[in-house]
Length: 230
Length: 230
DNA sequence: GCTTCGATATGGTCTGACCATACTGTGGTC
DNA sequence: GACCACAGTATGGTCAGACCATATCGAAGC
Image (cartoon, rainbow over all chains, first blue to last red; front, side, top):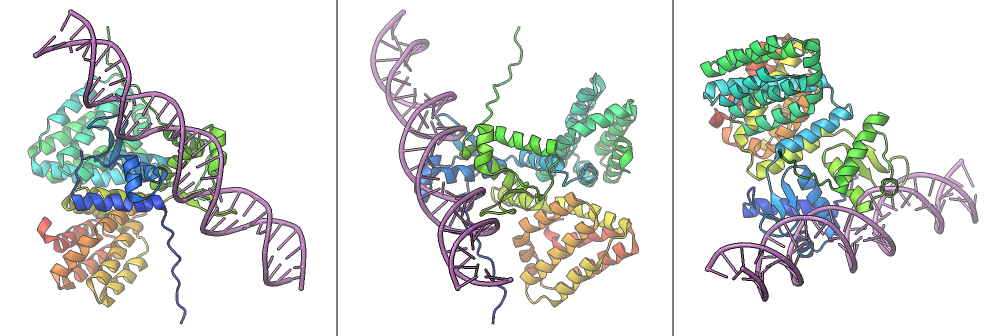
């Protein structure tokens, strides 16, 4: 007989609380904006201490699912939200700091995501005013930081234009977590005219509804911006 | 005069604790496997309560950066880890449940990631034994669940073969969070011979070192597996 | 040398208290 | 009636202190 014993899965109280909240969200069809019971009330209903409820809340907050507001009123308490991008940003930032991810990997991932996003945006014929606005911002920028700010806006707008919210969230997170390196890259490059031409080309391809050209334009743009990684 | 007032940034104690731990990780060059001080000790050193330290730990644990072990000894306490994939999985699962993301978006994202991963794997000439093993597992599968299990292994092995850990983590999370739907899709499809041929084609392309063919094979495979989403 | 069992350090949980915050409702004032 | 000042109150945020379960360590005993 004998057989491979499975280790006893110790489930901690707060994990149980999370699971119940999660089940409740699914069962009641709760949506972003809806309120969860107050911590004290939830603790009493679940028969656990408030500490455990609070730890569960911290986890859900970290995952970008709830947001806690102090005070009283309709907006106070734990409110369901939908911020996958902030959660992703924290995740990437920490793992970059821990060196469990390298910048090369992040940029490479971004390339894959953004090629697809550009292609989708082009074939969907999305609105391009956000892209144009960001482009103008880059022209007016007077420092590398400012330039990167609008550059980020450009690429996020491109992701938004893909119509895929997960893509958009991932793009925001990737950009946020590599902001510091982007400023370095722009500073090292000095002349931003090449990047400007790239952006123009991407915008034109999206406007023209040409997915392949859009994807290629993005790929070449990233190769220009981070030449050391090719 | 006046200008745009910034809202007062209420920083909660546990957020401060996180920031300090994060800074300490970077400053001391801590790596996965290293231990953090015990909760009580950390609370005393930082001049905060243990509850605040614990909430910080919950956040870091959620982000896949630390792992807590009870007991005593060298492995007990909070140990730095590197599990971005479990964190990503939780994130996606919750947001899918909250309907802030749709399945279509997840699959579309997966397509973009996996095309790139396949291309990288092909041009890197990576080891393909994992892919072959998973393929054999699919052939031996006697249920849709079992099939999907090995199918997941195949696609995760492909992502691993790309050599990009972020890609691999994202692929694992995407697959895990859509496991349920994958089983449905296979069941609906009935005949898996088409999928088998697709997998063979992907494997062959990777072995041949043909990035474009690998990417195309992946794209067509996903179109076969989820025809309703094309 | 080996086993046994207490000491101990660790995270996990609970209780109860207090604070800061922000809305709610009441009462007074004009 | 409209407005304002203020006490009331529900909320999350924080703390202190206790107890439990677990896993190792170490000394005592064989």
